[in-house]
Image (cartoon, rainbow, N blue to C red; front, side):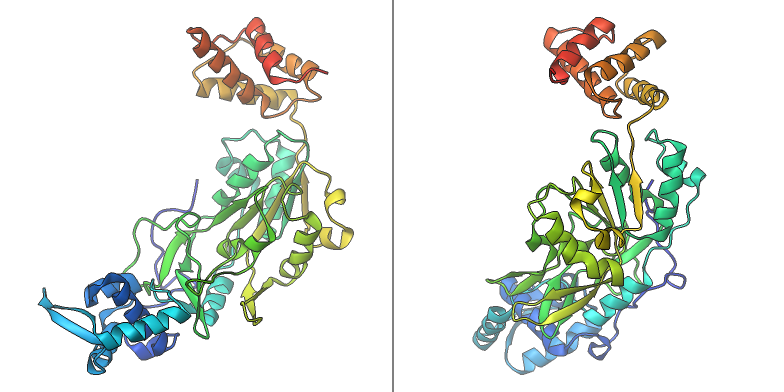
Length: 421
């Protein structure tokens, strides 16, 4: 269950910028619009006002004055009119100017919004979640979760503050964290890019952000209506991913991962096993978690204050006290221990897994699975049913027969799955 793929009415949405009617109504400088215009035409060779409107996400009434000014200054070479639209390229002087502007910053995508507009958008779109045990059970219905876990998770989600999910490996911490996004039932606006004093920071990421199927006509097209984001990082996380990254060849900045997760969830999976040390990461985020602001630095040293409206979820099988000191743990008010599953939960998980694979077993065999896992492992784990059933399936494919859920076959699967003492 995710945010509905429908458009909220603009009059009820907390942040809804209308399309700019004139160049003066933009929250960025006309010089930047001119630069994007020139760089886009340079990149495309020839263009039209219609093509620029699609590329820059700006209406005709904003682009036409820029076109007329550049044409008057002899930077544009008009080739003709086709379908009531000007087609043009750059003159020699236009190519020189475009090359000069591209040497400073080569950005030629959708026009950015101002940092002030982005800050206001993120603040106004901060998540406000109302959940109950029943609603949580519904949205997380594909997981087998005990009532006491739901009752801890509910207040944590309402708080929208950082969450520590910890406990032995294999009991569903990652699966649970990945499904938390389901509690959000609204959409948010995310800009393609931001501008600050001529610098451009790209933000919208088609890999991480999921636009709604239809975008509204009464919205400034520089913003994309998306489901609330969910960004996951694991062992690959390095400190550079949490800072602005500048491409030296293009002069374009890329937003860090936590900024792309704003107004949503940022999951740090297998926390404590990243390339960046837990201490360095936690020290980096003491201020953001406490004050809801993050400080990023441009290449020349200028500091930016960025909103940090994101629910950070740490999932780990390590002891939190071994990863962080008391000062940091105090800033994570929600700490939920995901314990090994009970035999009742284990059996329910097994039944669901078998049904998904169109397999079945009788009650004594189900009990045998639990007893087998207790003998070979140190406790019952939520991952065991799926893992063992996978091995049963693979073995049956190898031997050219239908899979069988019998004590003998389970013993063979356990021999492959569990290590020997």
